[in-house]
Image 1 (cartoon, rainbow, N blue to C red):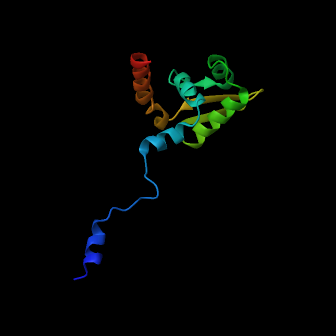
Image 2 (image 1 turned 135 degrees about the horizontal axis):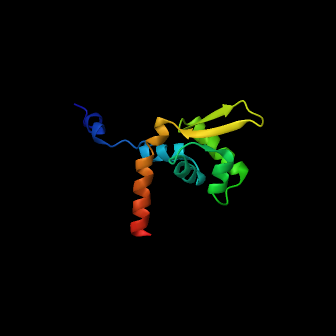
Image 3 (image 1 turned 30 degrees about the horizontal axis):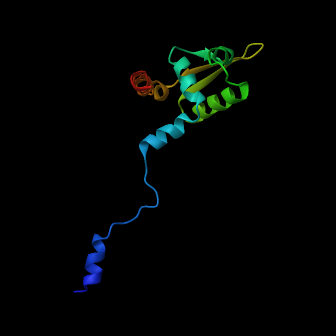
Length: 114
């Protein structure tokens, strides 16, 4: 029996990448504004202008980018109403609602440790 061949089965492999579900979650959430958008949408459906007023210091461009990112990942949905001017409302999907507990725990951790 070739000992080199049989012992090679016991040499650990070095993975090229390691999948991390936390990393995937953070990818879905996106940038720093996503948490604040979610915080506001946990309180119910919101229009763009209301979100911009409630989230201080967010630029219209950053808010638009964040909303698009969250919509692309199925966290929120954008509803357009044919009014003049057009009315657009944002609300959480069930996937987005599922994030509520995670963010609540993060808030509790922050209150305790920061």
